[in-house]
Image (tube, rainbow, N blue to C red; front, side):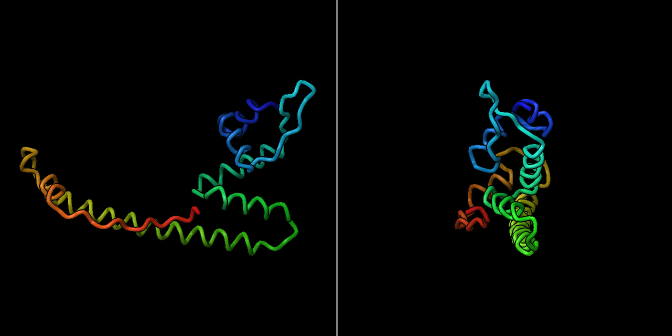
Length: 143
């Protein structure tokens, strides 16, 4: 199948496929006599795998590691479990950060319970007068 058919089957764009090829996540397709890429069912399966990993917010390095592990299907899946456990830990940390951010926003929102002129708005006054907090280190599993 051609790239447009693959994109339609996998519900993505041809640009997405080319990007994953450039990143080394997609395996090279055979070429036809007319030099078109000829994708197979294995490409559909791999692309779905990649897109499902991305939907789980996995980084390309994590996906690459999982794909490497799938190339040895006879091995035990302990490494797969470890990778997913590590990703869960990163998600937990991000949830903590987002809950902290939500608390800050809720505190800020409580400063202006009624409508009034912007010059008298407690939110605007607080944002203008509070000290800038030191940048918190962003926790990311993307290296």
